[in-house]
Image 1 (cartoon, rainbow, N blue to C red):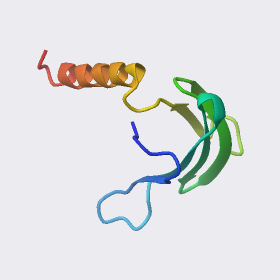
Image 2 (cartoon, rainbow, N blue to C red):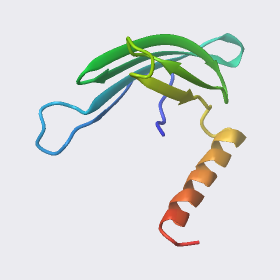
Image 3 (tube, rainbow, N blue to C red):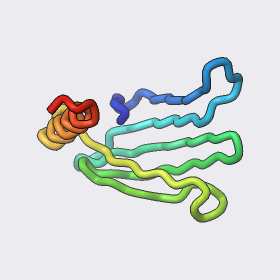
Image 4 (tube, rainbow, N blue to C red):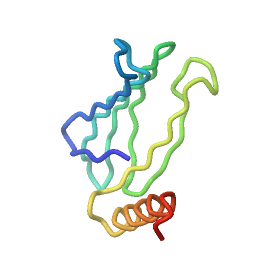
Length: 106
């Protein structure tokens, strides 16, 4: 789960300790649009492939798509929500419950 701000890029990468190369990198550039829609530019880089897409999502919309040159090679699922909306708070409550459950703390 990533939390970002429209108009500001979000960069995420995972790297093994001591490695010069990232396992993956994500670069998201969200922008607000009219009528509650959001534009999103997404770049994904893995050592063996890269992908890019530009899309438009509504609050609460989830979309799954292929970014790699071959089907099944690089698949991304995005869910966009406005922070502090009732839906966002419900999702965070569920995530917190899942963490507690996985630790056996219910």
